[in-house]
Length: 265
Image (cartoon, rainbow, N blue to C red):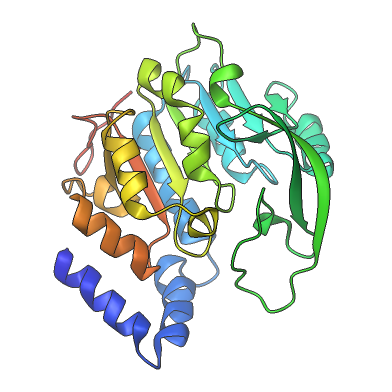
């Protein structure tokens, strides 16, 4: 896998790199006419780990695509959704009346903050600007409430799965969820990379140390985890992170690799 990851980096840094990455994401990761490849991987991870009574958290729920699958797979669970954009949070409350929808941004502190709403592509919105994969982002600042996951999830609430997609703030969300993750040992799928998390001043080594240290987990990509491959060593993870080809990762407790067809939950 190291050789493959290095090859990806070399291609990406070549003159054909930007075009190659776009084609890879369009045709290899997603498939013609399919949903986003990373969403498909996330769904497959959930199929492996969730029971009908499992409880989940969707951080950056947006339109609720992943949240809907959480409810489909675990209709008897307790589910939490976090979405700071008021119009999206309102839609989620209507579409998912049984979900505990919180109109807040998650981080590692509690307070108020200015939030960057990308008006013409809301999925890029976050607490800070990031490097956008489009030439014309329309940025609007709105005031939002910020809190920690540890301050919202009750101590007695067991969680099986957490998804975090907040366009760069994932590291800080994880820091604000240390007790919740330690307590329940859920599988965590999160986005990250130089264009997003890197704009928060976060280095890949910090992400690796947080997962391996305070959170007591292992770190990989979803594809590696789904096929039963071992977790990344720090150097491997940092190389993949900096290459930018993979930007969705999975953190899981020791012994949480399912192999070709196992199940955690």
